[in-house]
Length: 228
Image (cartoon, rainbow, N blue to C red; front, side):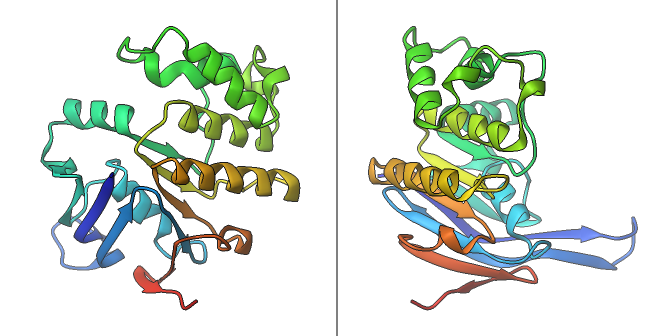
């Protein structure tokens, strides 16, 4: 079973080059994401949630500590090897827009597999299935500039889930969504975890917490377990 483990990771930004004056975005943190489980991380904007997610996803090198996917130390890999590992095994659903505007919705969803020429021939079928599940199949051939914020969010989720990653790191996945689509997206993420993925949902939306296996709160860069 998949396991993503953070061991003593922290992120510190120096305010001025050559000086010891720094800002600690994330304090020293241990965290394990288990396959088959949904972990929810709550907290206000600016509390360090996204910084932690980016370190877990191999997108931001910690100042200290290490991140292990199984026995593989992400930040001990070369840039090329880390990029390939992320593409094949970790899906990040970003908070901001991540669409390639020159591509259609379907092409955006299929993009991860085309980067290394490893997309199975039937992936377009899977892409259509996820678009249908998320209510955006009629937009498959539309350019992303024609989509609303909520439609772009659902496209990013379809792109992540289509490739059956071992780890899903979702940053505010219900942002821009109405109540009906929020419930749908959370249900699909929980279903994906039940099928074996390790899922982290970073959110300030209380709707994300029910049904989670583990819940944490981020406050001023510190990770705090939530009761209940």
